[in-house]
Length: 443
Image (cartoon, rainbow, N blue to C red; front, side):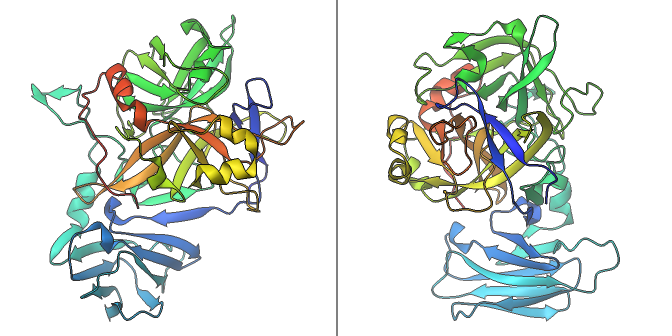
């Protein structure tokens, strides 16, 4: 689908400090999440044909009746199952019901029909009601367009709750992966550059906005052989997804770096504590720039085994030139034993403080392994029924076969798990420890 093979920067134990992994033969996918709800989502199978996944298991209830009204005409088909029914009530609406033994998760298919020329085939939901409670309608969508505020920012003397991991509604409902990102799709992801004596900037790593004054990245991204780089040699660019050096892009921010704090336990030859916080003077939260939530404080990575996460990163072309394009893909968290069985070298890097992820060596569509400092993120349902994105890992190490000059996408990558470092992160990010403690569900 793409006219070039994508390479992404990441640290490797095979190369000195940085190498590349590639992405090829991938197919762009789309996910539609009405009103940013955790209750259900639609995955595009092919043109006009979408798979709907319903997550009744997120709620503590015995019976469920959900009515949906679509913007366009639809048709439905279901997998054989006696535990739930999907019934059309007219050309635009349907009712989903499950009684007695409530399924945690089930799927059915929706076809969008009679579309006009140039109409999108997305099964746009106008209204959604669960057990007589409206969860999605135009009023709710309008409210989601409001830009959230940060706990450190006050209006009229009032203190606001920290809001994170949310995107504007035009980016919230339709999520594309394995393709070029649009501004606002991943508003917490930043590019970190190295500057030379002539102020020429070279892309180095990714990072994650976690507050108005803090960006979380990998320690190796801001150091050289374990020694912290001079602040004057680093620069951060937020709010853009392409043409990173174009200073005239709307939404582009280059916050001034004040301080860099490396985790005191960081060692260059392992992935434990490979974390650093870049302190900046101020980040303005806009439609293109938002903070991501931080998962923790926990030591529970086993709960994520074989769960699907998302990773994003700027890449390099097959000629090892910066592509200036942000892309994303899905990736599975692996059991440590899966990774050590694949290659013994992983054993050195995997422990209670690290996470192994990747789609395995036999996947013909090689995954985008992200760039160093970039995040391993999960979408989770919150008490207001909406999806928030949480950061669980920061990319530390990638690998390849002996003698390789680039990291290989068939190999798993290792993330530093941010959960055990929650207190350290929040202290240096100027956030309250209790902000966004992760208590919600994993989809």
